[in-house]
Image (cartoon, rainbow, N blue to C red; front, side, top):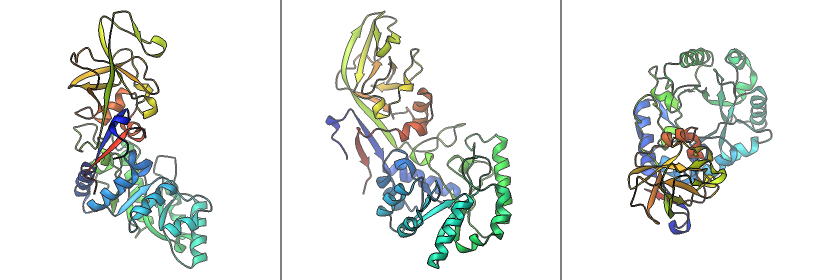
Length: 369
């Protein structure tokens, strides 16, 4: 555990056993496809090294990160894993990728040319993935370039180990864009034959078309996020955030709380202050004057945040938890307050909540070998 609980404003408990169980659930659902793991952004905030080790123990062989720096950290933990770098090949980084055994995901002609030239210089076909953009318009070759790729000498100089694209709206299964992307990717696959294919992210694993191909790439669902927002969450919660109340006070109706006096007590209220704020990733956007913003559970009672969330402090209305006192626990994530609900209350998504988890928390890992 990093950080002593009594020295931190809150304790973040991370259940690595639940992480592994989530990976196994997705693996079984996608079988016979291989199930990889996306561990970018410090494994969605829970800790890259800890998550990587836990997933590898569960049987995961292939990992995806965003940046080479993340890949190098992961390589130190997992010397045998296949590690793909989603954000492509930085100019001049060929030797670094090869020395670390990393696989760039190539999505442009300059990247492909640079990697091919490096492979020729070493007289070795180093592995890489090819990224084809079927609708996101961020990174990747356009689908109509597939025939040109097949005919280009550069493709013969590298070892293409994966052909991939990225779904735009898999969490909305009725959207026509899903079917369009699946069809477009099938056309590309028919042109670039004999390269293992990957399209499905977390929610894509649950699409009725089952676009699993050779490999699926779950991320958010591994960490407890709901890949099926149209129905109950099939994943186990991985993170729990709990703060201690540091002060309780009584206020009269008409008194205000927090910066800029944006909340006014409608009558006598009990307020509790937590040593957590937006510097800890408890987002300021969760502030709301009408009780629809961020909330916490105190002795099982939902208690809304009142006033503006500040850098290091948050105020709760604990009137409905009348026995709440200094030192009592306030659960900010957990006990049924799921990460997706926390995101919604902050006007964002659970992804942002996870990846904003603060470094000042005392981190407690469960099931860490």
